[in-house]
Each structure stands twice: as C-alpha cells, then as structure tokens.
Length: 508
Image 1 (cartoon, rainbow, N blue to C red):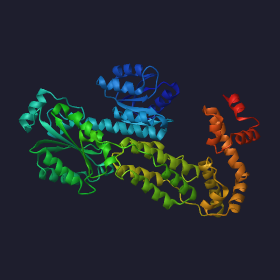
Image 2 (image 1 turned 90 degrees about the vertical axis):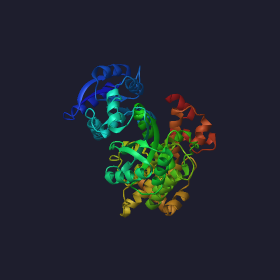
Image 3 (image 1 turned 45 degrees about the vertical axis):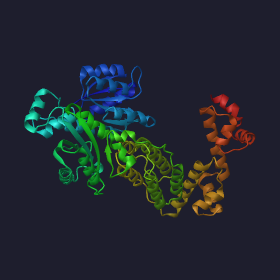
C-alpha cells in the first residue's frame, strides 16, 4: 500500500519516512511534500492509499488539502499530525473524514499502531466491495461505504430481485455497540431481527461494521414508519446491556443512502448528552437546545486535593461525581462534554505525575484523547476515565517513602494554592500531621523552610508573567498572591537584585 507525507518540517518528514521504511513491506513510501498545495498535486498524481499530513502549513493547510481531495473524489486515508493544543483541529479533521491522528512528538509505538489500524481499515473496506451484482448485503454495503455507484444496471437488478426501487424511501438505522462490539454481535442481530419484525419492518438487511462498532440496518419495506420508530425506542428503553444505542433517519432513495448513513452515524455523539435508551433521530437531533456548559472546577480542585492526601477511594468517588455531573438533566453539547473530560483527566494526570503516583513515561496520553474524542456514549467516556485511574500506583508502606510522599503532597498544595496564600497549619491539617513535623520533614528534604519555598515559588511565577504577558505590575502581584504591590516589588528585588519593571525590560 502506498503512502505519502505532507509536512513543512524537513526533520519530521525524514523521521516519518524512516519509520515507514521500518514497516517491513506493509507500506511503500511514495513521495513527500512540504505544504498542502504541493501535497494535493502529489495526491492527484500518486493516488496513494494513505497520506500523513500536518495541520498547519504554508500556502495550504492539511485540513484544506483533505477537503479539496475529498471534493475531487480522492479518498486516500488521512492521518493528521497535531500538537495537543491543536486537538480541536484534529477533531475537525476527523469530521472531514480523516481516519486517525498522531500527537507531536510522534511516539514510535503509536505510529506503528496507527498505521496498522489504517491498514486494517483499508483491507476491511476492500473486502466489503461486492462482486458485480452480488447479494443484497454486499450491494447495500457497497453503497454505504462508497465502493458501489448507484447505476441503472444495479438498480434494475435490485428492482427485479428484491423489489427495491431506486427512489424507494428507506429507513437507515445505526445500531452503535461501542466497546461491546464483536463479542455478542450474532446474539444482538437476532434480538434486533425479532424486534424489527414485531414493529412492522417487513424487509430489512442488517450489516456489520467492526471498525465503526456498528450494525447498520437498511429497512426497505415497511407499512408505518412511526410504528417502527416506536418499536425501536421501546426496545432501547428495555435496558438490556446488549442492545446498545441507535440512530434513525429516513433516506430518500438509494442515491442518498451513503450520505444518510454518514449523517446518522455522525449524530451518535448525542448519546453522550442524552444517555442510553434514547433513539437519536434526524433531523430532530439538530433542534436540541443546549445549555452553556460551566466546567465543574470545584470537582477538579477536589480530586487534586484528594490525590495530594492519597485518598484513592475518595478520588474514585469524585470521578463518579464528575461523570454524573453531565447526566443531571442539563443538555450540554457532546463537544462541550468531551472537552470537559479532556481538561479534567489531564488535570488529574498532571497532579498524579507531580506526586509520583503514575509512571508518566508509560502513560499513553494520545490514547486517552483518542478515546474521548471517538466516544459515542457516556459509558465509553466513563471507561476512558476508569482506564486513567487504573494507572494510579498503590501507596508506599515504608516510613521513609511515606515521609517523601508527604513532602511531595505539600509541594503540590503550595503549587496549587500559592495564589490564595495557603499556610503551613492549613497544609498540616489537610495532611493530618502536626505543623512541627511537617516543617521538619520539608526542611530536611528540600533544605528550605516553608516560607522561603513559598516565596521563591511565587517569585518564579512572577518572572514567567513578567516575560510572557503584558499584565500590569499590580496585576502580577495579585496573581502570585501579593495584595500589596509595593511589598511585592520589595520582595522581588530582595530575591533577584532588581525591581520587577527592570527585570521585564532586561528580558523582553
């Protein structure tokens, strides 16, 4: 299979080229370009199976290139490369049809895993291409996945063999199985077959997409669409774990079948908002009035505090409260919910790393982001959160290590609450030790007293704000915990030998 690379940094292009050469024959490196405009020309000329592209490039970015290629009928699988701060662009790329994405810096293991996933997807889609005028399942799968065009010959065959006309009104049902896909698909199919027949679906075809974790269903003969819809909704509300979630859309003819399926599959995100047991129907789902999502910052602060205290049971309880926050009846958009999950989990991971409660070198941040962005149910989001917590290391038992962990927790609290002026007594109370014990342990481990460490940390933060922002001096003083600007300037000069204004001027 041929693959090309579109990236404006030569070093990254060369690195990706080397990694592709290590794939032992699965992939053939077929060319490279340093911007989207040249990349589009390369796509037209080479017709590769896949393209790895950066998002931001001169002349034409990766997203614009992908969109232009799609409009020209070039369907190479796209793998976008982005920084964590650009995950919004990665989401847009997935909406444009990109197959996967990689985070910078690119991890070798994740690179190989991503190319393996794309290779599997290409092979699976190729296997779905029906033999000419094959069975109904193959033909409908070919329509949905773009391997078959709706033409007079095929339509004539469908009409004579299945009484399925080109302009027939079809119900497209997307059954989303999520993490349960593959294990009990045959059982799930039988349950849905029985339900659809009892709901008045006279003729239908159940397909299967392991990659998308779905069972697409095409209902092409039915008496009353309202009865079918009610039967499906009732089935979903039965609460059976094997049922999954479902989306419902009416397709006006075979030519719109692929677009209809893609529309309803893309709408399955709304189960994140509406929960299980709700039938996603198009276009009604577009009329949902969402509420502005206010991020639950108090829960983030709580989980950080409990991590500092080592109360892992409470940490898991707060994680459950966070998940429950989005099921309290307020209709937040799926996008807002996913962004809250990313922010919350990354904050928790950051604290876990600072406390030494996680092996960060083995933590797969990209897998977490990928899992959140591709989730189409609350259960999947909760599974991602549970996987993050599973990385927590158990507490240490040895006295020396306990003392070391206490100092780490103390530092974390200083870093978290330095702006509000947390005291030694307050930290000692939270850690359930005496101030004297805590002060001695901290001084022994760091060589500094609590007050000196707090002062130096505040001054370091002030330096960052002086160099990296245009904030006024009194604003910086308040931001690092000093209510008196003159006193802040005095302390800053004692620590650095110059006033804040002089420090900013020297380092700008």
